Image 1 (cartoon, helix red, strand yellow):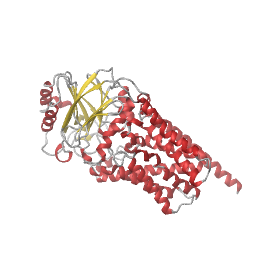
Image 2 (cartoon, rainbow, N blue to C red):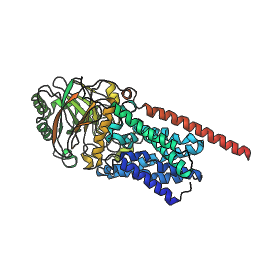
Image 3 (cartoon, one colour):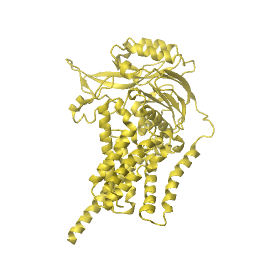
Image 4 (cartoon, helix red, strand yellow):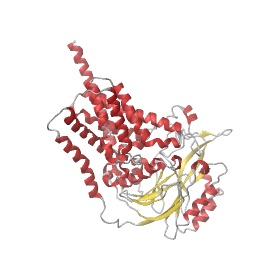
Length: 537
């Protein structure tokens, strides 16, 4: 290969555009993701042939991944321009560094099979992105198929990393085919094409075999009512003068249009009780008797709703603890799920996976001054308190409360299912992003959690979309965006444990182990090569 600089930048542009328009709701041309990395692979090949350093690849791959990030998640800027800017810059940086590392490894190993190291390297990056404080796994390659659920029924074995493995494998095979035909001019080029087509088609055919022919039968039906109160998060939900009583009246007015004697659970959105309160004082607050009186009209139905809460401590409880001026006490704020049963005491579970920059300041435990950079997005700002481990509510059924951002984390949800959750409940507030691809993408990701764990998902979103997904990721109910809505749905309580539920992100763990092996091998080979060249001199 002998590409000019302009041609290399054109390849970068092509990769960025292909990845952007194949992502859900920013094009949704899903098959294009299978060629999205091909231009970048040719770019790497050309630079390796010319023995140019990783800096050239970094600049050109940065362009590709910046286009990818901007093209798919530009809507983050509707909530916070500064937060979006940081997300674009750093996420692009991490993707580019990962691809440059692949280039260095490939160059160091000098082996035909070295191109396949892209798979464990990229999946290791995605795995780390699920498990550190700058976590932003929205653009995980396996998420591209959230609107193609008939293609990925095998996610019950692999989770989204199986999708990433699939995407990267087909990209590499197509690159090898194109290189054989156009660059190396080999006659026996059909093998790579056959392998790539086989790799593309086989998972889809297997997935079709997994789809149900008959409607689901056999499990106990649990009737869930969902209310979508449609409170503007910018001008109403957290506005001065707004009371919890006002917002609860709006919620209960909607709920009573669908609740009847068969209802087991009523679900409200994230921070439906938006004005913060001390959890231990809930039953003494003025709005609590109103909740109880409204629930009595339902019969036996229980209530699962989001709330902004806080708790007091005599000593610093965690990095989220804030000293109270003039007192020897600390308070800690939470984004919580609240379950109020028809009998027994209310219980809280705090959100564990926090949005970086909005609910949590990354690394502020090491650098406390970073808390001053917190982005206020309604309610509180700065780092919130969390649950150290995923938890479930034990009500009439065992429920998995999944708050907003947590619904992107497959292993987090599977942990809740391992604790016995038979229904997944997502409560969220997607109104921050406006009428953009953001809320549509977030809605579609719930289908992935349904397939991975073979559980029905009930979703209540403040401004929409609310809905219900069956265990195959099919949409059973779906509301419109930015409209008041309420519905009721009978949901089967399923208990089968899938391979993914039991083993979680095992593909990510294996990839990290392979990454360590690959890096060790590369370093040894480079050292030996250097010693050999020195001895020859």
